Every structure is written in structure tokens, then in C-alpha cells.
Amino acid sequence: MNYKLLSDKNLVISSNIIKYLDKNLSLNEFLILLYFINNESDSFDANKISKMFNITIDIVIDSFNNLVAKELIDLETKKDKNNKVVEKVSLDNLYKNVMSSLDDEIKAEEKDSIFDTIEKEFDKKLSPIDMEIINGWLEIGTPEELIRGAIKEAAYNGVKTLRYMDQIIYEWQKKGFKTMEDINNHLKTKDSKGKEDLFDYNWLDDDE
Image (cartoon, rainbow, N blue to C red; front, side):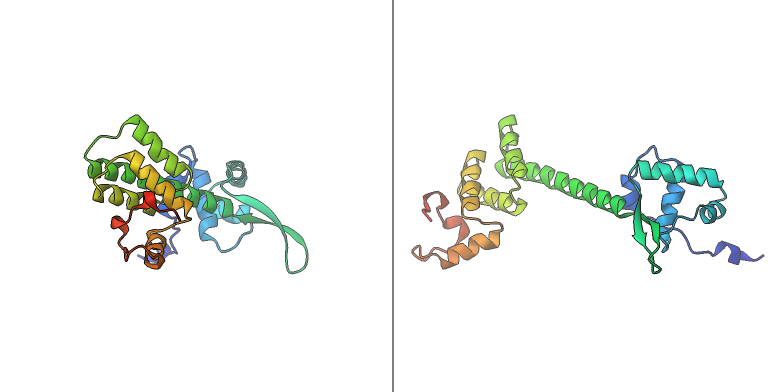
């Protein structure tokens, strides 16, 4: 028995793309999307796709149009080497949306992690007001690194309150700090009686 018929190149798709895809995506729409992800050509050849998946050309065209409507693929007008205007299939919108979705997941995980870290470090359940303060930091784009640094600062000084953390973060942002390295570099270049340790420094009395 000749098994070479089964050794064609496999069609592959990232698990991240599968997670992003609309659950209402039909099998035929998925197959056509799979085709373009794996195909080096960016031309829409309904006849070729029809033969590959053993579906009618009408189904191919309908499914393709549905993917365009769902903004999973796009048709871009370009000029070929003969300066002739042609339509090319683009997956850029799909990839951008998947990356945006992954970024949102990472931010959500970081947010949950920050909440958990504060509760563990402060040994208390966060109140609605506490959560509002934390969400305020995140909404204005406060780097997670600074929030975690402020947690350690508060714990070191025995002032385990969100209000204290809020004051520290405000002082750091006022000075333009983006990372803990920025803060440490500031301390190393500041003449403050030889103080160079982050947690020994009184940021609330720093006039600079």
C-alpha cells in the first residue's frame, strides 16, 4: 500500500489564532482561512481552493466573502510587475487583532497578579476603594514595575496602605521615572548624605 498519498505537507495554524477566532466560524470559513495562512501566494484562486478541500466554488466564494465581512482577511489593491492593478489577500488585520487580544490577556493576568500580590503582602482583602486606586494606576499606564516597587517600599517601611503607595507612585511619576532602574540611578547621582538604598530614602520629603 502506498502511503505517500498521505505524506503531503500538513496545514498548520497557531493555537493563539484558534483561540481568537469567532466560535461561530463555519468549517468552510476555517478551511479557507487555514489555506491562506499556509499558502505563500496572496492571490485568491477559488478553483484551487475548491479542489484542495473538495468543496464547491460557490461555497468557497461565499465563505471567502464571509471572512472579509468578519474582517479576518482583507483584499488589497496592488500593482503587479507589469503595472497591472490586481487584488491581493492580506491577513494583516487578523494578525493585528490576534496580537491585540494577546496583549489584553497579558494585561489582565498582570492586573490579577498585582491584586493578589498586594493582598498577600498587606495580608488583607482589598476593599472596593483599594481596587479603585489600583485600577486608577493601571488606567493611566503606570508601569507594573513601579507598582511592584511601591509595594516593596510600603512593606519595607511598615506602611501597608494603598494611600501611601499612591503617594510614592505619584512622586516617582512626577520625576519621570519609568523603571526601578531609573529610580536607583536617581539615588546614586543625588547627594543625600550618602543614601543610595531605595527603601531607606524618604521620597515624600524629596523636593527635587
